[in-house]
Image (tube, rainbow, N blue to C red; front, side, top):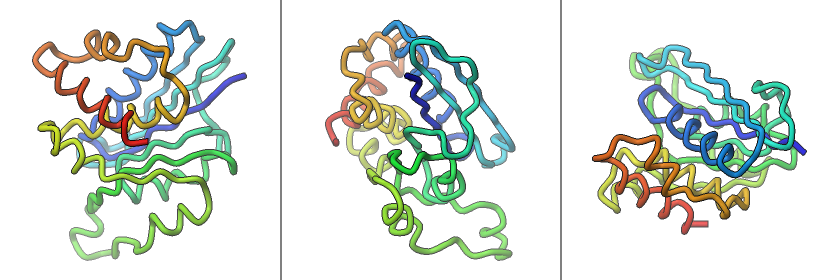
Length: 189
């Protein structure tokens, strides 16, 4: 059976690193894993998505609409934008952070209201302020690993040595703080 995880966010939030860590962890657990990244205008704060699929045999990295078991969103509006990719019985993990897109900043469009309420009325949702939680442990940029920790717990991926995976994928000076962020996310569920 193949599972699909869709990570979405805005450029600079660490979405791609989060996907890489998930992929590495799943590979070490013996799964066949495929990953695909779409950067968009990530350098300018645009939408970024990473598709991760794993199981006994995975043929494609691309998650089709209605095919994701878990949607991990690093920002509210990105969760709404990608919600159609989640299975009806899937689960959304959403960082409550708001990052205003350029169109809102220049006054062209308003930021939608009630996003979290709307989503939680449609699918099983875990909402947390990952940005604030990461700051509490001294790593404001650790929201990405915090969200990965939350998803790992929800997916039952406890048999993976996540500390080792983080150590393999993060620069030495950031290993410990990212491990703490992952552990914090894991403990919040």
